[in-house]
Amino acid sequence: MYPNPTAEVVYIEHTRPVTEVSVFNLFGQVLANFMTTHNQNYVLDFSELKRGMYFVRITDENNHIFIQKVIKK
Image (cartoon, rainbow, N blue to C red; front, side, top):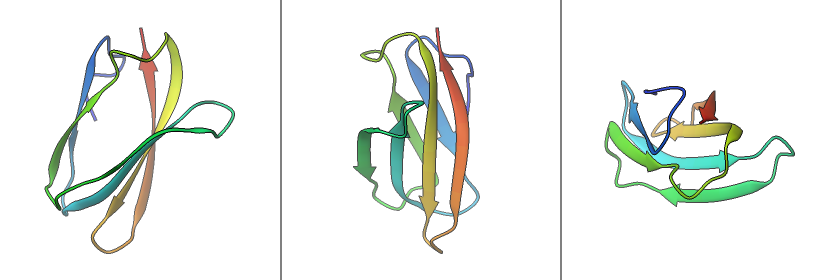
């Protein structure tokens, strides 16, 4: 995921096709959940979110879960 920190968008590149992307706040609340079209690349729009720290959870086609911290500036 890049750029991190970000002001507007985060680009996701993964080795396997991604099936789901979710954004969480620090309290674990789901702010956004997207089912993808099984692409390895995805663009996530952070422009509407307030400044702060978020967690992005990526699920790939093998149901492997990856979590990355993202800072919105």
